[in-house]
Amino acid sequence: AQVTMPLPQELRQAVTRDAGELLQALYEHTSRRMYALHLELVLGDTCQKWHCDQNIARALVTYVGPGTLCASEEAVTRASDGSVDAVCDAEAISCVAGDILLMKGGLFHGCGRGVAHRGMALYVFVRVHVFVRVLCTRLHV
Image (tube, rainbow, N blue to C red; front, side, top):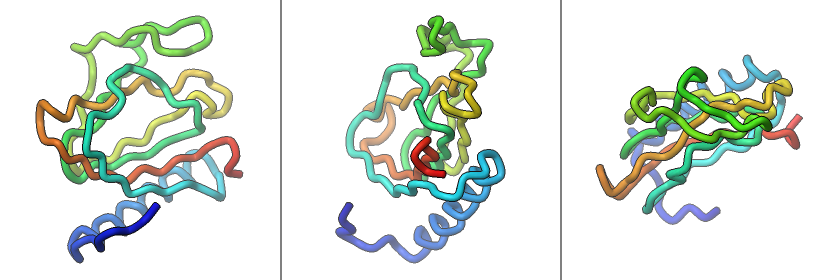
């Protein structure tokens, strides 16, 4: 990754604070010692398909643009392997800018049923999406 422009001071402070809180929350729930932290600027649509990640856990906070959609297990129909077949869209929960989302992945303590989620269509709202993503994968112990 390459930094092409420094963040404004106010955003820098918020991102630093939130990254620390996301890392602390992941540590409390996974006891892992290594994480991958990303600050991302998305200029197009994100994944529109309902799915679950094959990692241990993921934490997100969106600063600009629509947040991630996620669903409670009651709204999810799954295949026998735990992958997401369908989600009742009326039951989906929509995160907004400033919300922190902590999601279990399919590898979370062997559960095989990570949180069903998908990205929002950016063309409905704005074309810019800025968020911090922290991943905890099986490679990071």
